[in-house]
Length: 313
Image 1 (cartoon, rainbow, N blue to C red):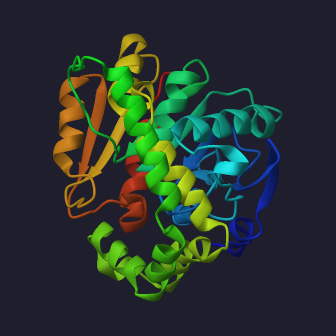
Image 2: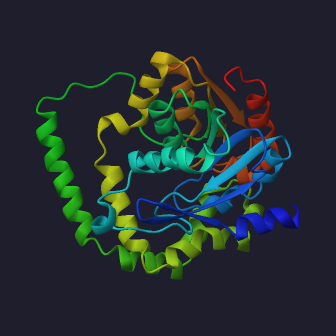
């Protein structure tokens, strides 16, 4: 990895989004194909450190973005932003495209996501389908349902449930929980569960995940996420979004899944590909939840071959 790239990701850019400071990095900014890399829950733009340079050397402008609440971006709470969910993060990405990428490029955007980042990429593809060339999702979280279940009084039940969730998380001592997580080595345990290849869990990776949690604003932001993600409308859930995208089939969709993923088992990926025949599923053997970091060369080559063969670019 060259020193210029290291400097790029460690000397980030800051963008003012609705009064919040958002952190982002780019390598190969003048290249033709714009890609936005979207990290998973608890990670940041630096989780793509083994991927960005590969794409920048293949004529891709490789942008990595700290979603609001993560990494070096601001960590607002309920009072500052209300809630945090994939709609808010999607709005952040849409404005990033309009304000940061569009002055440089009018090309369609490639979105590459890991876990939560995959859900955000899917949300953006539905919302911005004419501007998105493709989505590459490395594990897609959320329950996948084939048919919508009809529930009587669904609206009233949802309002009661959402109210309960809000009250629960307002009083739940997340500050103490996060303190204990950092002190008791829970982050390392979580990484050992997420990664099949344990040798990839080094000091750099642990720092990437731990440092944002140590910030004084992390608990309030996590509270906004817990409330936002657990009380989402059905229209923000993967099943609904995939059905919406299915209707137009304008955005090619590649799923890359590790067969040793403990967080979101492979059967979920197979279920998605089975329900939605236009979705392409690539299975990577002996890899866990973060293939892009566990097996970057495999992930990079699968993704680049897919991008290279696109008709939508």
